[in-house]
Length: 266
Picture 1: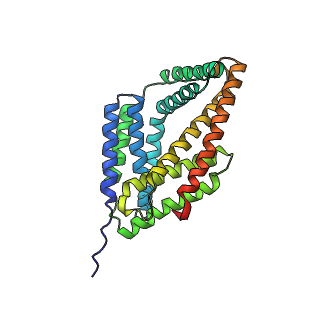
Picture 2: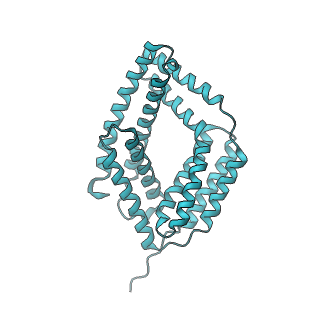
Picture 3: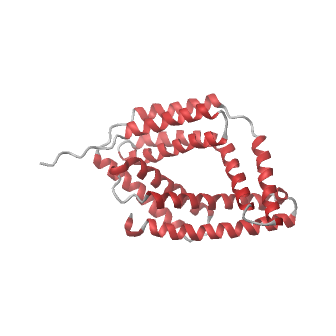
């Protein structure tokens, strides 16, 4: 007689991610890289919570809203740091005038980040611990519920790809990126409990490219709204051309990778 399938311990996995998030935050001391590591842990926990929606829909909704509040508080400094890094990385791909324009944008964004008010560390720590408390009361999920929850994550990623692939709408591309991140984190964390091929390397690469495309788009929006970031109008035009080429190239790569990742309904 076949033994019952052992279920993935969702509560333990959620709790582990959030303990790690608290530890990363305590060790960050405001450093953007440390804050980013904390955010990644929260994102991983949110992906698990989406798998766990099947067995705890009400608790999952509360968890997700609380996590969104924490993520917003963590986002400002790290998001600006990511945009600055993206502008500098693109500057290194160009010569002379476009490079100077992109480097100027990076410098202005750095100034903006340095002028941000300090994070309310006590409130953030309390928010992270509230998430941990929610994780610790998550009901036990059966193997069947884990499969259903994982397939729900897959369906959402597949639907977001259908709307986002080939689209010029930033909102569609952004939604696709978020759902692919959920898929990658959930597949990585569930391991053998994941119901299809995980294709983690391809999934991680797709998420990274969609993220780079998102950074290029956000930089384009900033320069369009404030050309002086690049220095003057001519410098802004050079930066916009470089960013548009970058965004277009990344978009085509993401569309191709998305087709490969989701081939066969994976």
